[in-house]
Each structure stands twice: as C-alpha cells, then as structure tokens.
Image (cartoon, rainbow, N blue to C red; front, side):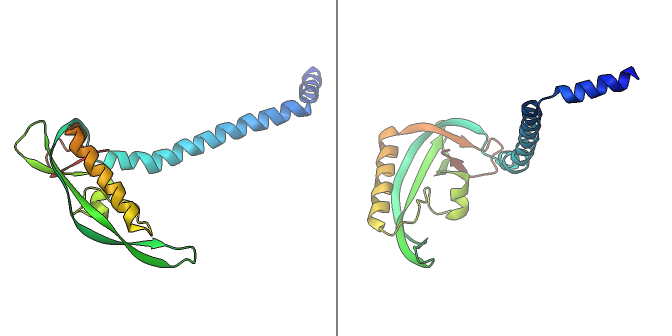
Length: 162
C-alpha cells in the first residue's frame, strides 16, 4: 500500500547523523528535567525554611572578639588535629531600633556556634585564622551600616549578614 511505502521512505530518509542529533536532543531534555527536579527538591526547601526574609539596614553596635574556640581540621593522613579560631561577636540594631540583636554571617553559622557571629574555616595555622577574623572586625567597624536580613515575624532574636 501507499502508506507502507511512505513509512519506509520516511524511516530510511533519516541519516545516522540526524538520528544521533535526535538522541542528543532527547538526552538534553531528560537531563534538564532531572536537574530541575533535583534543584527543586534540595535548594527550594532550604529557601522556604529560612525565616530571615526581610532585608533592612543594620547599624553596628559592637564588634569584638570574645574568646577563642577550638576546632578540628583534617590532615593529609586522614586524621584530625585541633586548632583555634577567635570568636567574633557582632551586635547590631535594625533600622535604629532600641533592640540589640546578634549578627550571624550566614544561617548555618548559628547552628555551628551560636556564641560567634563568624565561624572561619578551621586551619592548621591559627595565626592565619586570627588575621582573617581581625580583617572582618575592622571592616565591620569601618562600615558601621550595612544590609542585613531579619525575621519580620520577630521569632528570631538574630539577623543574618548574607
């Protein structure tokens, strides 16, 4: 029949390069759907969980090192050694309010060490970490005002820098 002849001509009309291009296009579409799904499952819930959603201007009240904290770092021999970092505590006012809040570098900082505003990466050389924290302290003191994120519902008594 005529239909069978047309189908045979259509199938034989595709060259091997065109078939590979169809496979490549289909593969790209499938991988983008998988990527979209994975990002929706992992990243979006973290954003939805965040309570620090409102951006405001913070005014520095105090930035000082309150002590030294021990931390652990891994060595090339797959063992752990201890080091130290200075505990930087930054307190701020949000929009000239009378309430003094603790500023944390990121949301995770509060979970890592709620007594410190900034938790640097634990390094073997504690002097390098001390210099890094001192630079951050000087930057806060120099800036005095900077953008921060707070909880508009007032459930959290802290603000987030980033």
